[in-house]
Length: 124
Image (cartoon, one colour):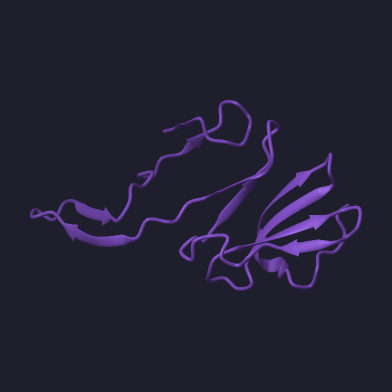
């Protein structure tokens, strides 16, 4: 059991966690409020010490971050800035809606994890 987290973490806005069982560390992404960029809390189970990573760890536009603990190395933080909607226009016939973003999107693709490692191997 992890026990209680420091009061600086608002439990309603916990996003993800990664645990290193060998070194007894845990990392959590969380937000102080719904809006804004997530923050990272590093927690040591043996001593109950914790450290807050710098607030500028993520780009200000990042809305969600997921922590992944691969078996081959240290924790990696994966985050993607969501594409911004530039415009949405109907085609001349009015039967299609053409949406343009400032960056590539997944176009509604569904991720598939064939290796069972929590990292998508393909998108359909």
